Length: 229
Image: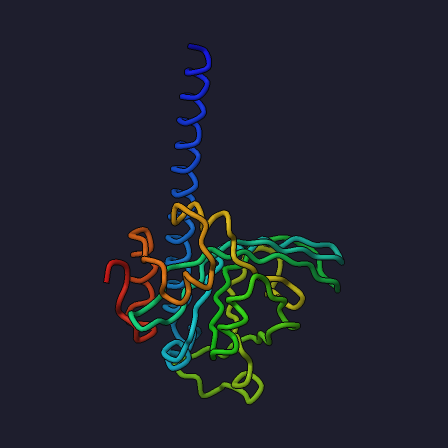
């Protein structure tokens, strides 16, 4: 009898954990959608439309944590989606980790948007892990109504980064940081272990919880097909 009760309690606990994990993923996707909408809606300081319309993938990290005194550290989770033959792919949960060294002091959070410009950048993001500045070139992207201010260096960068800083830092540097898929969170979101490449290439069904993300991307990127389509 006691054994049965313990087994039942364990099953209930596991179900509650899975439900809570799924809710966390849904919240992260919703926050990412809000960040993208707010950043791309900023008058005259948003991501140029022609850059968004050519984007191969878009990554969004709401509230990237930053703290430092001479030696800095950063950590955050977000979502990544890529273009497929049927619109945007299902979202892959990603995490950014890293440190930096330099004249810095303070703490805060930064909302981050990564715009992948070409297939080389997309291939880098599909790896198990890549290092910013080492495995892939990431540069601060131009802002404004158009991408006319895009420099030659930015044109050849694989990924353009955009940030909205809060706290004591004026901006954020991703150099030396690592970006990787969060395998545990993706397993919680989709109900089973799944490779990030399979998610981003359209092999995984788009979850209903991603609808806010697709709604935010619609009209800004030229892709209009979301969950269930």
